[in-house]
Length: 449
Image: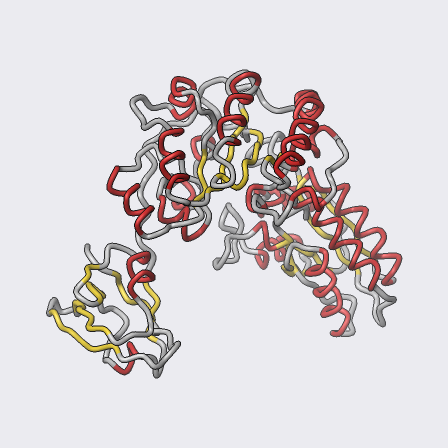
């Protein structure tokens, strides 16, 4: 259906004064039809404008919006359905999900609008010429683009589709029109590494500074790959040889252009037990959400927390759950923080039974795996769960369990916390303020936690 479904109207706002209500569908502003939220952002300013809307009873109406200078119109809208992905990528993580998870987890999106609004990666393989023109005319920048390979035949093999647009032509057109792009390569050993990766990096480097950054991240494989192409995992040996080859190249490229253009995912360094680059080598962390630079940033924040930490007036006993890849990093931080604060803080590394042993990040730990890991172990005090393990806005794990349900199963109080050293320390101090070591604060999800 056309237009935008109004979800909320701020009290006293121009929309409220004009008589708009939740449930109405906003169709146009200043005689320009609204296709999506981007059109609304493009058109909604602080100038008077006539709007057309559709009421729930099917009647059309108009109203005049009369905002004061710098006044927001006061509308929020129900989410629109994203454009669905038509690719059949050989490494697609969604194809590897087990049955029985929440239905939205199985939805594949390929929507340039979400790339602009939320920073999600798109391949542009289904982008229409009219959509490319719209990106340019409405200045939808920056965009986040999955390249994977610039060789046309190899890219079609990786995406599982034939006849897709040539990615270099699309990127060049965007660059010519000064659209900023952040790009990624999901590295599949034996497919798009070696000479193919060299070609991809070199071609994208030629498009700098419009292509602001390129992250190389390893493919993720779960144990649920029945009837899917056989792929080689990135193990510790591969990660080490990859870093021996590509870290010097990364440093050479970045020094030459004076910016952190090429970045390698933290997972390579964790798998190889390799020293991380200094945080300054990641620039302004443009690939943070891609798992690039989180661990160096964690170390910096942890050092700042340890420096300001003091003995606390009450002793808190707590167990912090985390994924296997970050357990030693988190454990070192908790050990030092315990010494500085007088609290008893320990880490519990949670093996991922849902997805398989190759999946070790904290953000994919589910509630049942925490229960399975801790059910036969004595766990005193509180269970601290990083928020990165939970669905944002819903407060549940991937398997729909909540921290409360996990705590009840383990007969322990579960508390969630912001998944950073500072967030953890703030939570710890709040627990101390309650003056009882039996009080707790839940899960930690995200970054190294």
